[in-house]
Length: 93
Image 1: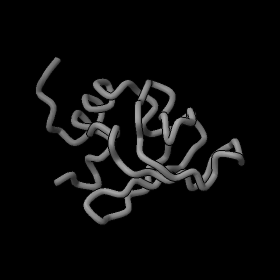
Image 2 (image 1 turned 135 degrees about the vertical axis):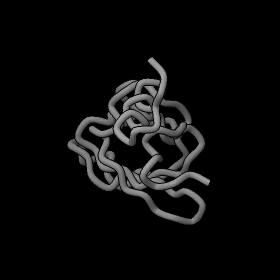
Image 3 (image 1 turned 180 degrees about the horizontal axis):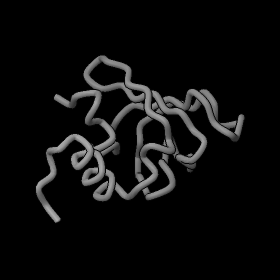
Image 4 (image 1 turned 90 degrees about the vertical axis):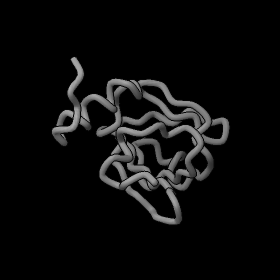
């Protein structure tokens, strides 16, 4: 099971997501499954959603977890290292 505090370190592809806030008002309320992820974007229901300036709500195991897009503005592997280093659990280089 994914813990809420470690969600930014996990793979987001396949999770249900809803855009709560965004600098582009046409994206607010968009709901779907994360189909792909790049350093700066999420692909949700066929729409490219920039992470910068967004607030996302992910559904994981029946829980809702809110994450700022600016906090996940990294490639997934970089994000994992950064989060685990902050938590004192990364021993790699």
